[in-house]
Image (tube, rainbow over all chains, first blue to last red; front, side):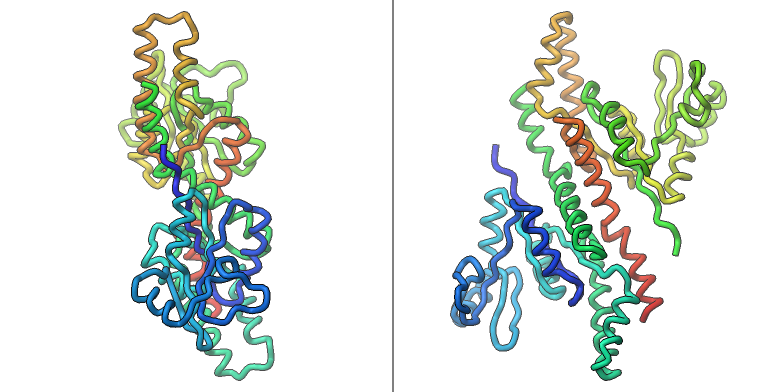
Length: 205
Length: 205
């Protein structure tokens, strides 16, 4: 029998919701989960290892990856390219392991176009009023800047519609438990289980 | 904001797989879960309470429930009718609580026709070879009877295709954990969460 393919989990959500914190807290809880490694054109920092922290690429290499559709998503940020190599994800899934990708909302939508069978998790703030008071309460921003940030937050929350699940980040531990339950449930979906039984039926009967 | 509707969980699977045991083991683990109460035409036994153990009905009453489409499924068994009243399920779901219905495979398919939005869980044996040796190993049955039982088991397993999830009953505790994960995940589905956020967006922005 062939090995079951892993699941691609895409963890996203509005900026400031705590994606990085939740993703880090998942590591000890789900040790079998593989974290996607990004490609970048920025210079490696002291101690960073190619293929572990990032796949470090020259600009021409990265551009050819874009052209050859070798990235599930990419973006330019302060003069450098960042992206998610499709091959690393595909190879890991083929080996039967689940992959998690932590990413901004815009990048997640790109991934969904190229990889619609992924499980898209929208990490959401527990309360929008709190989000508003966090944005207005800093006291350092102009009214226009507050209005802009609120518009962005609103637009990001409306993108929730493109996701499979909404995980409220009220407490990091609870958010992790919810994600673990989703991963368990997704593996139990009939579509993922029935082949095994069809195979057994042929063998046994 | 209106109360979220509960989920209808339908726990089914081939005979002998352990549906009753798993369902009983879920009670202390998921105290908020409401167990569907069946209607029956059989005589109440000592201590049985109407509306708790069963809804006890006269034959004519039961037949009129069938005619008026008031049952999600029904069957006749040794001269008595048994069925699942739709009203109890609907009222409980409307109050925001989840309902579980433990039922034979044929009944589950009837429920699916009338209530496709239910979550259909197929409780499966961990190993079909074990199922075969359990059937053949009793030593009391004729070859024809063994063949018949195997045919039934095969047909029941093929019905897995109509379900949403496959829960292996290798250990009762593990089966319960899987069911709990599925219920958690189903509540987190975007379709069930997004209205709350749409409402908040209107309120806050």
